[in-house]
Image (cartoon, rainbow, N blue to C red; front, side, top):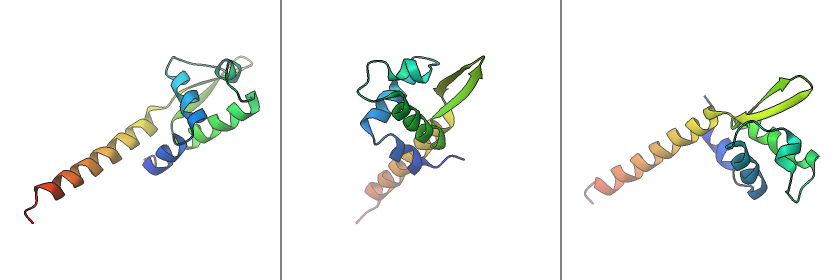
Length: 97
């Protein structure tokens, strides 16, 4: 199972969130993801590495190209963590004081 804290940390960086948002549009190469950003392609590659480690992105090779896409395992880990946290807080509010 993916680590939800790692997912949340990965999405804490604004540039990384933008790269992730671009991945939502479909498979993209580093060049496509870097287009129009204020960071270099190597910097985008580093952001993708963090997203991959967090379970938010996957890479596949297609000929000579490396294409990146969203990995739903990281999203699911964050969703489960947030749900448990929300349920825990709701349970605290329901308890009589």
